[in-house]
Length: 95
Image 1 (cartoon, rainbow, N blue to C red):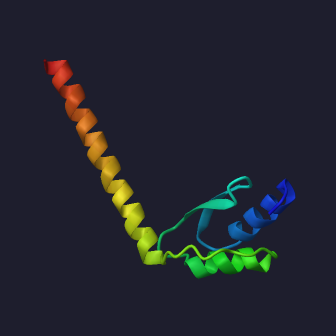
Image 2: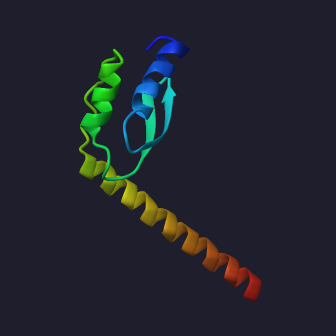
């Protein structure tokens, strides 16, 4: 990818995959952030979408299961942080 037109092509290709909710391609980093319905989209689906619009995809080395595991871990971390913040706030109000 070398220009904003390339970014638009890749974003459109990824958005065409059923189950993809949102796409943001970073030209400088050469990466895409894809929000999707977990379990409905595979890495292969995303790879094919990008290749179908004429771009190469480097091997990311992740399976869908690993991505799901990482997302679930992030969610657990967020819930733990929210719980800790609520506890701190509660102590301040009572303290």
